[in-house]
Length: 236
Picture 1: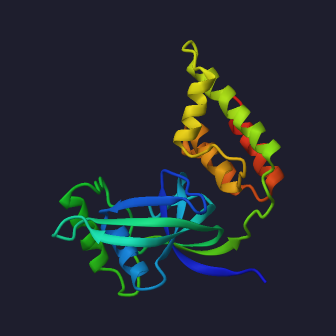
Picture 2 (picture 1 turned 180 degrees about the horizontal axis):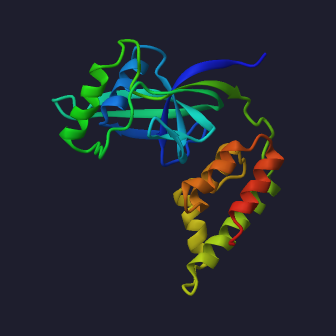
């Protein structure tokens, strides 16, 4: 039986992978409402790469596949309570089945970094129903984790691809092999027991844009993941 649930959705300019940490500073009123609601429930919301081609009431909507983020810590940044710092951990992947639009449209010339922008959102929210939410929500279907093991041969292959791409992108500067190994050590990617989390981290290290990581997140098998990693490491 397919498991579905309703999740608050936070579109961001990044891709969150399962078991990765994600700190966020929250200052927009609609996302402060999201955090408040999460803290009163199970502390979970969905993180999706923002999709500028998918507008929902004027706001950037989400890509179709994302990752559940669990809030592990929440504290005010300032005494005025205008900003909140949260720490989160990635959990299961999900696929959006149905979008639940926010209660308010994107105001004209909205600037989330100003008091005027905050006031504009607050004024719009006062006219919404009490049970409406300023943030986007979605009915989502949880995606099973890839449970295949990463062999050492596969990992060595992926490392080799990453090294070749990194060295080629640095030209005409020459990066010595020892320097590449040092980078892997710095990011805790030197291992004899690789897991899928290592593949996710290496992909993030080799990507130049969050859009390049969305296909990695959407892979549903180890074979598909390896193929998409190879595509990511190919310089077009």
